[in-house]
Amino acid sequence: MRVTKLISNGKGYPTVKGVRPIIDRSRDPHFMREALAEAEKAAALGEVPVGAVLVREGEIIGRGFNRPISSHDPSAHAEMLAIRMAAAEAGNYRLPGSTLYVTLEPCSMCSGLLVHARIQRLVYGTVEPKSGAVESRGRFFEQEHLNHRVMVEGGVLAEECSQALSAFFRARREAAKKPRED
Image 1 (cartoon, rainbow, N blue to C red):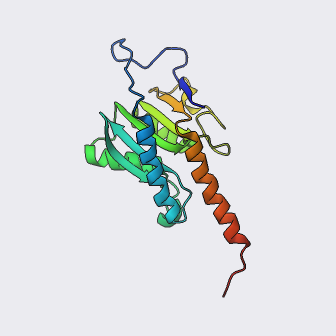
Image 2 (cartoon, rainbow, N blue to C red; image 1 turned 180 degrees about the vertical axis):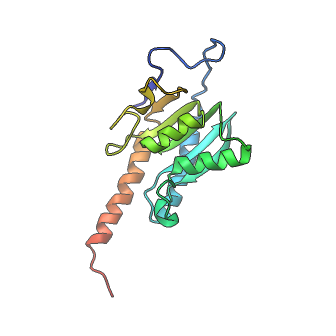
């Protein structure tokens, strides 16, 4: 199921001089597969398999995968790392006109980053029932005081994204059941 919503507090689409943006959704599955490839890198390191890519004008400008455990950095979420990479390359912390593709619904920390970086659009794969801040546990982008609006679409390749997480946690549970050989 694909969920599409615009977070705008009833003010309509975020616009530039009153013109509704034209959004090309045809490449969403392609870019979500790129994010899934990033998630595989996280899983290979024993990290929760979440991946992200940041796209502007049809080109990937940032990539990231979860690394909080291996980097000893609680902020090293896939979204953070993809946006940091793009901002460093652009020489600007604001990245207007970009779309973030992430395999899992962002937490509140990452949602705040999207606003601060002026990300135009968020596309995520599957919901995060424990800490998702877009629709599952909170509605971060619906806060009236925010100075930027983000277009949000969820459910892109939801099954594939959910399966990657389920397989990771299933393998982790199975490994925990096995007796250790010391």
